[in-house]
Length: 113
Image 1 (tube, rainbow, N blue to C red):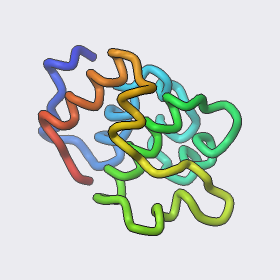
Image 2 (cartoon, helix red, strand yellow; image 1 turned 180 degrees about the vertical axis):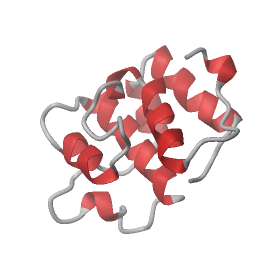
Image 3 (cartoon, rainbow, N blue to C red; image 1 turned 45 degrees about the vertical axis):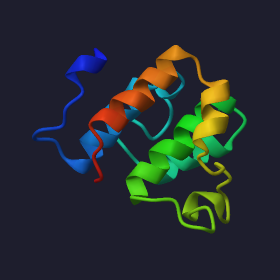
């Protein structure tokens, strides 16, 4: 999907999250992205399949899903989950242009499910 068309007019929260994940190359096709299932997605992001770019993207997406990132790191860093905290500076050092474009597209037109 071209970034210029990033707009959520009449979508459910789960469809919005699915589309957001699809903007990040390393999240396309990841477990829990289609259909959106935050628990399956967090398990995938906590596992060895996700590289650092994907982990930062996953931490960002889960922060959007929860509307913020609590001081304790969020539920996706408790019990069986270990996604990590989203840090814009660290992510920007790791992400390629496609990942940065996805993040910037959300920043230009944010939504909170």
